[in-house]
Length: 292
Image (cartoon, rainbow, N blue to C red):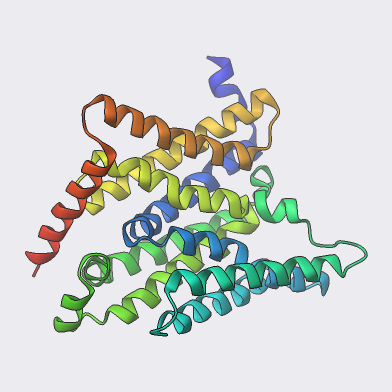
């Protein structure tokens, strides 16, 4: 069993594993709402919309975390404002902001003769270089995410399934949507400098999507997504160690692989993915309608 446990005897691999676990828990909680709300494209746009802030912060010797937070905040505000336009679809606004922010970031990088911003590092991070203070930051982000989800659970539920009823019940769906954007931003900003935007986005979408065919309640979907994310982290680090591949990209690939295996297994059980997702939606809607 040395091939299985040997890689995790190294301290830096242990820190990488813990960082992946924390990111998986954050993304499982937030990503479940993102998938059910149909905000996958927004998550992709947010992950790349941080590039201008990261580029400016790097070129001028600033804090990358602050630069990413400012850029992500601008992106979130832009999505919110454009989403209120009756003549402009939300996907159109997100697409325009996505292209605009990414293009601006690449332009900033290209104007630097030293190319101080490492685009590869931005996309893939360096999960094997995680420090203990990075773990503390991820733990704090996890606590904030869990508290926000617990406090806003019913409002998020209404936002996902019946926004008009949310208005009549006084659940303020616009505020719930803004908070959900904030959670996506928090997941991206606190994790990208550790594991890269590719891994964050992969763990935000793939594990919840993999868990949906196997559960009809949101809390269990979140738990299943966490297990899929942790499994992808462990398997990705193990394969990366033995195959000499990039750790972050390998973890993201494993997350996607587990999604396809989950879909295949659910079809073998004569439980089509679309039917499972519809059952999940119906069960969750009943949970919302009968909640106090």
